[in-house]
Length: 374
Image (cartoon, rainbow, N blue to C red; front, side, top):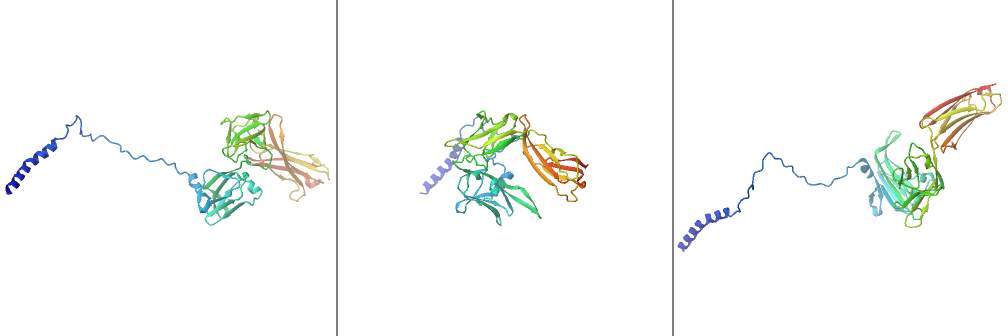
């Protein structure tokens, strides 16, 4: 037994180095250049893992989160740029903030619509519109007010808006209070034919009444904006006339109201003003009219004020303001605005200078004329 153990140990001692050596030598021969040490001077740019690019969070995306729609079962949904609902549905919007102001289609204010309710609660403003109609289609927006004392201003960084389509198969065009509208074509700014639709997918085309033809929308000079209507980017006198829009959406086409396009070309700036008296010499007891006249842009309002001899003595006078459109005969339309001061039973205290001050958004013009007593 002892002999067998010794023999086993002897065999193991002789075999072990041989086996280890065999294992080391059993590797395949190296290929030329294999295991070459890389030069230390060579820099290897580490590969960073690819990450999905995220859009920068601009002010609009941050502020948009203040406006939400209240859904069923107390759920809330952040609003995108547009939202489509069926006419007849009610909607509740909430805007975060303790002092919130709202904007919505103006006719809801014009007619004091009882379907619209606006409240300010502790942490948010609330707008509820019930029994919606196609006419409610438009932009709904809110913003926070920053107030100091009695003065408040809009916080430009906390604003949000959404354009809501209240779709109605029977009313493809957003209804308007009139059946005919005037659109002024001014060469200095785009003109909009406001045939807006309630269904954003509707196909809308623009047509001239006479000669009867479809007006091509080329995407450059004439474009279509579903939130505005057709836009003439560079109006000219060739565009004047009567036009209408046609819309189609899974049914019979519908026609909009008619739009009368009038070309306007007047100088920009303070009012172009003249003044004249019915007579510059008056007898006692005469009736005298002094007329102040402004020619200008049809859609620019003019405000008149007067200074006259008997003003400090509180002389009773009649002042009338009115305006009308005139065609200058060359395809151009101008607005003529007038203010007339009437002095009845002329007296000595009425003699002197009559001064008219006409003002628009660009400035004011002062003109004067003298009325003397015979």
